Length: 134
Length: 295
Image 1 (cartoon, each protein chain N blue to C red):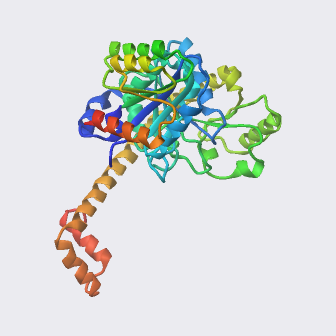
Image 2 (cartoon, each protein chain N blue to C red):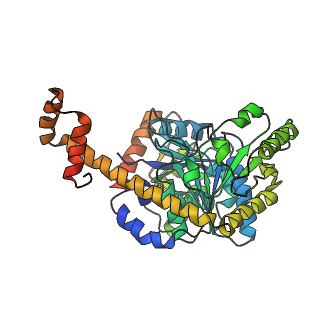
C-alpha cells in the first residue's frame, strides 16, 4: 500500500475566514490524503505541537487578515526549535508579494494566492509528501 | 507512532522493544453516534484528569473514504485547550478500511502511548453505528455517548453497541427531551442483568459546559477499580492476548496460502480438481499435512 500523506490544515491568529482552508482540506481529502483539520484561532504553539504529535508531512497555513508575517515566521521558528524542520510548511491567502518573498526566505515552501487551482495545490502537496517520505 | 501505524519496516522489532513497557495504562473507549459530543467530552474529561497530575494519551479515529482513500480528521479541533499541555498526547488516526469503528493499528498506537508513560488513554471511535463494537476488543472501560431524541425503548433493546458499554453518557443533557432519554436509559439498565457484578451508571453531561464530567470521571475510575478488584482485568488481558496470537497466526497462514496459490505447483493441483479427481477440501488438508499441521 502506498504510504498516506498526512497534512495539518490550520489558521493561525484571530482571523475567522475559514472557507478557503476548508475547501483546500476537502480537496486534499478527496485526493486520498489524511487531513487533520484544526480550524481557526490557533496559536503558532498549538499548530506546531499538533504537527509534531500527528507526525504530519506538511503543514498548510491559511491567512487573510494580514498577520501572516508574524504567525508564519513564528511557526517556522518553533519547528526549528523542536527539531521538526523535516515538516514542510506551505501557505495560502492574501499576502503582499514582498511578504511572500520574505516568507519563502524564512523557509516556507510555497504560498498559494487567490485563484489558485485546487489541482495545482494537490499536485504540489503530493510532491512534497513524496519527497518527505523518501 | 507512525511506524506502528503504518507497519513500516522495523515494526516487528519496535513492537518487541516497547511491549515490555505496555499493559499498565487504563484504556477507556469512547464510542457513540456521530455528533453526540465524544471529542468535546474527552477534552473536558482530560482537563479534569490533568488536575490530578495524570499523563494522558488520546487516540481519535475518523473514517477513511472507501472511494478516494482520503480522510478528514476533525476530532482534534474539539480539543484545542489540550494542545499545549505537556502531559497530553493526541493522535488522530484514519480507519483505513478497518471495520468496527477503529483502525487496525489503533491497538499498536495505544501501546506506543503506554510505552512513553501515559497512564490513562482515551480511544475515540469513528461516529459509530449500531454494530461498531471493535472498541470492545481494545479498551477496558467502554463509555457509550448518546444524546436526547436518539430513539425509543426498542432502539435501546437492540443488540450491538449498547451491549459493550460499561457506562452510558447522556450528553447535551440541557436539550429538550433529555429527561425522557435519561428515564429510557435508566430503565434499560434496570431491566438488564448486571454483567459480572457491575451495574451500568447513566451519567448526564453537558460537555461544552464541563457539567457532569466530574461524575463521569468517578464512574470511569470506579469501573477500573471494579475490574482490578474482581480479577476481571487479568481475565480480559489474557483473553485479548489469546485473541491477538490467534489473529497473528491467521494472518500468517493467510499470507502462506496466498504464496502457495501463486506457486507453479498449484496449477497441477487445480488441474486435478477441475478434472474432479480431487476436491478442494482434501487438497487443503493435504497441504496442511505437508506443513505438519494435520495428522
